[in-house]
Length: 377
Image (cartoon, rainbow, N blue to C red; front, side, top):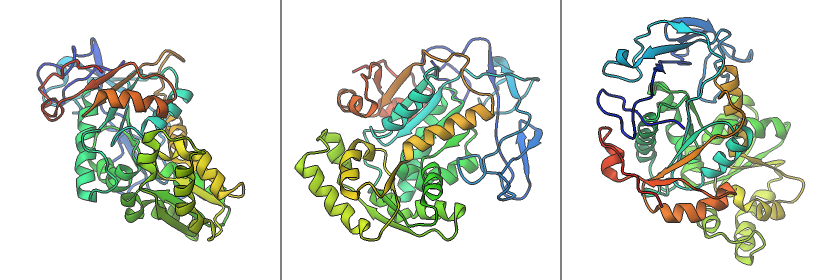
């Protein structure tokens, strides 16, 4: 399992510094949209954009940056200086595996549906999950606030030296991913573009419907993402805010309350004759049977979390960054409030028991020099 490390010199946040050597910058793209070059620690590689545009996007957007020659640079711990992510490279050696963890965060519990798909496809990977349960929900907050929260969550996960961070929250992906990609030194993957791309492929020129939180719908992120893949695609959207608390309550899909709410939200969209419906919130897959019952067999449902997991596999494979073991990966969860509730409700989202949940106090969360107490639920 990945261990937390500081981005500045001093003692580690939890446990000890990783023994031996540590990887430096990798798979960073700094093209500014001007050059078709990918710079990984100072080396130039090839940028494959699928023949669509002369732009390099490393955050799950149009055209992933896939370097033809992927090299991972190793740093002695003593050469880290004042910053974990500074590229004081002491030589590079090609490797075919990367056993560091994958970081995942969400505003609360919903991102566990993404983790479920990741663990199904990558059972050997260690995953560190942070649920910001003290500040949930993100869906009714301003984009500025969500962006600040997302950066703070990334800073926390960066202590564990992850090889990738998955923004498993549609609201945060919509509001903050572009800004994070421009400034954060770890590869990121959001949940909007993978779902949008799949929806366009399945729609075959027909209308696509999107259901999500108010903040995600107001951001227009899904429409803008789909337009990158098909400028002529017709997108209709509707916020479904009450789906989130209904999902967390654990009501069955055939519950009359669930079906009545789904009917109220979805029938106006069905009348617009979409062929694809994107479930643009990580809570919504728990209500999939009820959603499918209302929209009917003629509309294909797209789970943005499932598509995100597929993209994570593709990107790690392209970088030769998968773990060197096929099974046995660990899941460790951190939360900013109420670990017991997270454990109880989260196992429904994950569809298996959650063993390791640790509460992080505000002081520990914001102070990178503070060692979190082991406060398991």
